[in-house]
View (tube, rainbow, N blue to C red):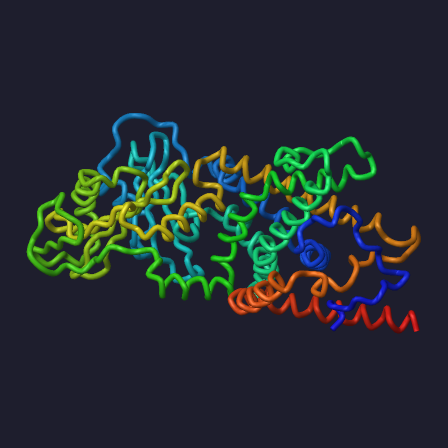
Length: 475
């Protein structure tokens, strides 16, 4: 097989990398895989980085563009929540009321959410209400649990699928699936390179570019910037895969089997009554909840007060039950500066707590997933989060551009010939103690993350074809 070929390289194959033999035994294989993945997958990562830079600052752009919906200049005490919702319902009596998100901060509007059968999946219509005057200030379609407005939704879909539908999502899944692999193999290469500098064999040189050799400045900046952005890049790759089609499905199955899924409060109204402030998983029910919308709206003030009295004090969304045997749920939203998502279920008739789910009781992986997704969306710690992501995307774009620049400059002629991969025989030169576990890991990862498996097979076929072509030319 060509990847284990130990024949002398053809004249169009780059010579082996020179340097002390004490370097990592993983180096030859890492170099070859980093080369192929960098050449063929980096364009997808570049697109993801460019669109991701826009997505990173989307919350700030949304706040600026849609300020007339999100902010008000009025002051004074807020009107009762039921009054605000009643005004929104009067503005859209043709739609079904499903939830309300009270204004989280002074100057914010209250969102009253409706189901609209003309909208797509995960879309709802929101009427924005001035909490001080209880007057609607406008309406807009909102998307998902984050309640993004059309511009942020467009940028999100642009980053996820380039607006090409399910087929377009393959580009972002391929980028997220390979990003961590390319980054970690790049780390192996950079550590090896630093170790071969006899006078500079220290961890400090991993983080600083060597500018003493002008001919290698691109390489040094490529590696150093890659180290700088590595931790965040790995996090973005992991969280990106949770949203993907094929790898995401496997991640979901794994989380379900390991009981790492995000928990939810029970909304069933059964069992003996429990006063507000009761313990977790308590239940309460004293009378059937009314089914008509006017009665539900009238209960909102009681529900909102009970939720705040029981520790749900951050920006939250109150889901209004559609049937009498269900409780109201109040769940904190993923907002900038919000690190926990507490939830509570309340009987609207009595204001009693029927179930509580503090964020502290989430499984650890569910917590980490929530924080990672919030960070990926630029919401974990607000504007600083967005600026950090924007900086990381700029660094990733720089690394990719420098990589392609070096690849092009290493072509064997200055005319039309393309650069060639590193010397063949990477597996043969790699220790079996490394090769066997690595191949087994590649098979497992390729099954769990299908786009890695398929593209890795494609790289192997390309490698075999290039080897056969080189032998034919030699003959």
